Length: 242
Image (cartoon, rainbow, N blue to C red; front, side, top):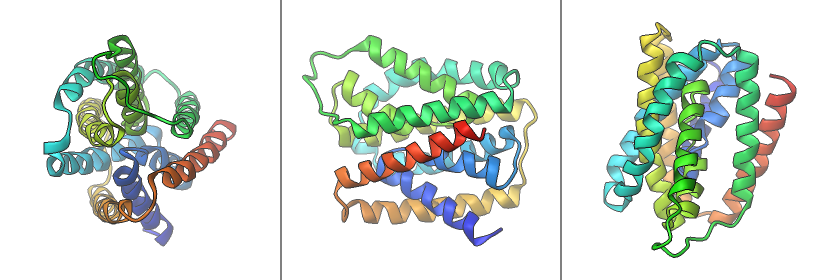
């Protein structure tokens, strides 16, 4: 495994810790184009590493997670993830899946450029929450994206919870969706090298630890703007070279 690959995996963990998601947006294009992996294997590896790491973070942050919001979101996203991973992913060509991935990435970049402010908690928009949950569930099953950096602003905008709590809650939702999609991929017979998965899991974990440390040092606004610019670059590259 190259130094570049190890650095990418650490960066994935840092993105998860700093932004509540975004790891798969870095990981999948790199494995698909940089390592020439089939889309199913890239998605499975993404789901393994991100699912385990977000589960561990959720355990650490369990007291500050909005579990009611997590439950509402997951009840809608869960069946969408299962159906997408089991029936839609095998039918859609890799090229189309990567284009969908690129469009999703650009959409997330737009959301990250926007100022998200919590609203009156008594005015929850359950329609918006439902649509966001269904969309992220389908995307998770289709391309292995947990959608954390889409879920966090969606919870803030539609469920009216503070953005910091929304980020922590989004990790719990990503964990549920990732594990659900992972089971769907395994049931279809998709497999990956165990040694490769273990190394990637450890490096992503180190990135998560580093990200939690950096989060207190760098202003959140500057981090979001920098990551949004990075996402624009990835999204355009994936769409132009699927």
